[in-house]
Image (tube, rainbow, N blue to C red; front, side, top):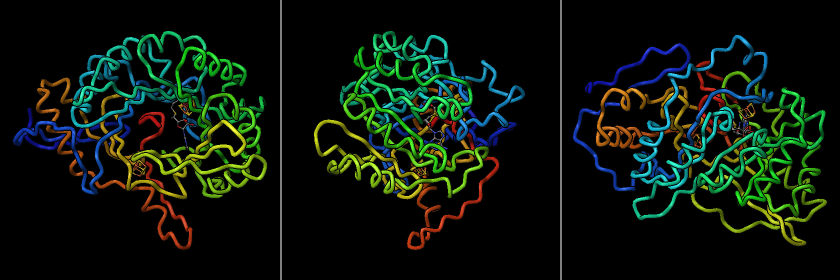
Length: 375
Ligand code: SAM
Ligand code: SF4
Ligand code: SF4
């Protein structure tokens, strides 16, 4: 293998092949970055394609019929994903989330899930293996996903109101089919099931209470996500962000809430329960309360690039290592070097100065899209 960091020409996003020349670093499950953050979570994007065109993620004007999605040969195959995942797990990863694009569009995904479900942490524990989906194919696939070894799912759903939901997914997809998918997933035991609602002020914030009422006694955990300035194509604007604090206040006014203890390390949601009985909700304040100090998450893109932050504009090309004959020990060493050097804390930096609440962002046009890196 080469001993240098080689910039790789790529039409879309920059990447470098990590250096694997130095002494080997054997994994001990205790990797830490420059801010003392361990590596615990891995998100793997299994496709950059999607059957929805959510306005905040893959706006149709950009992701149109001329958009160049990755050719199949660029994608990591299941053996490559499994090998990479095994190396991440050896370094401390305990939770793997499959995402995309729409992960259920990847053919034979169950085969990959079977492979990943067999991995164990260094202390012999099974992984927390989950998947985020738009729910469109969930009713059809929930049983086979569960049988393959998937632990649970997160379903994205931004509104119950049919015309609004269709406007937001921009694919004319009916809400009833997603709700049916959620029911089937609950019935086969893909639990705890979480529902993610991205809140865009002025677009779907009037759906917060209907969504809360609908899922209160359903057994699913509804989470409200602040609309983020991820990627470079969604035309993000701070005026369209509704603070999580306001989400909680609106729900609490009708359905009183109680905070649910301290969150687990690496947990991104602040959790609440209903005062009058069962039901839990969460808020993910990615914009107004950055949680970079506790970010233990790496992302593996569809074509095998490692990203250290959702807002990164440069990836580390693991695919070249995997395909060009690097040994497991060399890939382990490469991952150790990359994570040791990690400094990323985009959301915390964006939020400064915190006392004024001012947010100034200049969007780097080379920043990776959510559908490529996996949300
Ligand atoms: N297609 C799947 C889905 O929608 O669940 C998985 C991929 S999607 C990129 C993962 C998550 O990112 C979804 O819950 C989606 O709502 C969220 N997301 C996408 N763009 C976002 C944005 N600009 N701000 C906040 N969340 C976003
Ligand atoms: Fe597709 Fe998910 Fe992005 Fe919507 S949020 S466009 S469903 S990848
Ligand atoms: Fe992690 Fe980057 Fe998000 Fe901060 S901005 S929480 S470092 S992904």
